[in-house]
Amino acid sequence: MKHLFARFATKISEWAGKPVIFILALTAVIIWAALGPFFDYSETWQLVINTGTTIITFLMVFVLQNAQTRDTRAIQAKLNEIILTSHAENRFIGIENLDEEELKRLDELVAKAAKGRGETEACRTTEDLKAMPSKKEEPRKRRASAKPAKQR
Image (cartoon, rainbow, N blue to C red):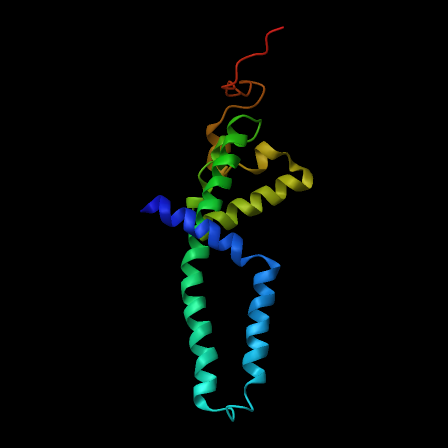
């Protein structure tokens, strides 16, 4: 059932994002507005558009949220793989689970690093810096890549 809903949510979100669907929705609203004088702008006339848009919006929230959550998880996994196979700090893996204050603090540290203080010093907390030996004492270790070396 999970996979069925995931496929359904993906297809609906792809379908809903097409320009032709927007044009169809716009056409429906224009037709509804044009019928206003014919129905004397009655409460029933208003109820038709209100009910229709509410039902569609309510259902689309769940479908689009499902598709967006899966996309976010896939992007997060890709970014984690890039971190693991690069010179980036492994401590950035899993930061999406930090609370708001911790994320703000990390964002400030990364902004300092971007201004030229040096990535490794700016991205460490003061506790991390106190506990670590200096760079001259211990060279940085890089995680070995999972890919086999090319043979000639």
